[in-house]
Image (cartoon, helix red, strand yellow):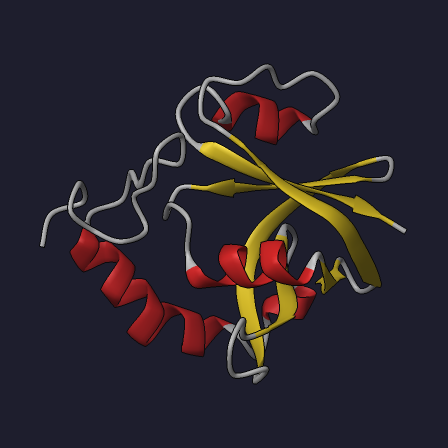
Length: 136
C-alpha cells in the first residue's frame, strides 16, 4: 500500500512517512520507548479512548507547548489517536513530567498560518498538518 492510498492520508493532513516506517515505528520503536517516554524531552504520552470501543489507549507523540496551546505535528497523517481525540473533544497528556488536560482539539491543515503556535510546530505546518489543543 502506498502513502496516497493509506487511510491515514486525508485531505489537508498528508502522510509524509512511508508505510513501512509507520509499521516499524508502531511495532518496534513505540513499545521500546513507551516506558521511558515520560522522562524524555519532547516525548509525551497522550491518553485517549477509542471512538466506538471506549477502550483506553496511550500513544507516544512529540508535543510542543506555548502558553496554553499544545501542538503536535501529524507526519503520520490523521491517525486513530487523532480521530479518537477529535471525537471525544478532550484528552489527557503527560507532558514533561506533568499531566495536562486538552480541550478544543482541532487539526490545522498543512500550509495553514502557524501564528500563535510553538516554534517547532510553526516550522512543521508548511509540510504537515498540526494537531492543536488548548490546555486547561
